[in-house]
Amino acid sequence: EAGVAQSPRYKIIEKRQSVAFWCNPISGHATLYWYQQILGQGPKLLIQFQNNGVVDDSQLPKDRFSAERLKGVDSTLKIQPAKLEDSAVYLCASSRRLDSYEQYFGPGTRLTVT
Amino acid sequence: AQSVTQPDIHITVSEGASLELRCNYSYGATPYLFWYVQSPGQGLQLLLKYFSGDTLVQGIKGFEAEFKRSQSSFNLRKPSVHWSDAAEYFCAVGAGRSNYQLIWGAGTKLIIKP
Image 1 (cartoon, rainbow over the protein chains, first blue to last red):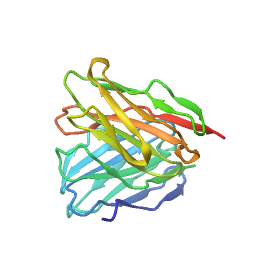
Image 2 (image 1 turned 180 degrees about the vertical axis):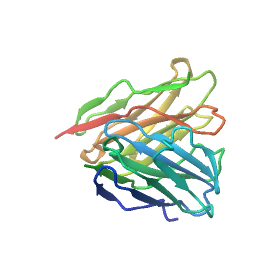
Image 3 (image 1 turned 135 degrees about the vertical axis):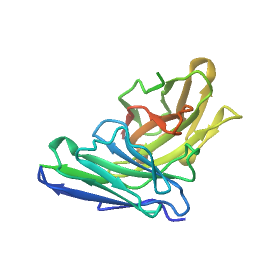
């Protein structure tokens, strides 16, 4: 079984530029999560999808962040415009169904905003 | 409010010595409990989980954890650490939230002395 795929692995941009991250979950997993992990901290949930619907986006800074999962499979997270404080690792995770707490993570995208 | 505490930010252990990483949670009922490991530059990998039953659970890479209801703890142990165990370890709790989200500890960084 293939794991969660993410790309790119690394990205360096200047502040005020835009960036997009892509995630392909484990096949058949209905629930997809995007997390932000700042160095030295635990993951912070940004948005949770169930199939192609948003379950929770209460911690997503909607003035600059957006995410979609149009066909209920892969997902894209976008930041526009980026700020210095967005420098972090962006993790994508998936679980088999909404009521399964067991999450499987991709390798993450390390974003550096200069 | 539900919370997860990992009291140790860093732990240094000699190679071959035993290891115990602490995790305490705040929740009224029995939660779902997880330990994840994050190696440098990698995503989070599930080490082990507790849902119910035997309170001593075995995981991958020789790790085990014990759920102690009276202490609201789920400590991670390994009898003999290897240099490759150097990583950050995160405890997470699924505690009946309506969206089945995990509550994360801040992590413990394990340093291995040769």
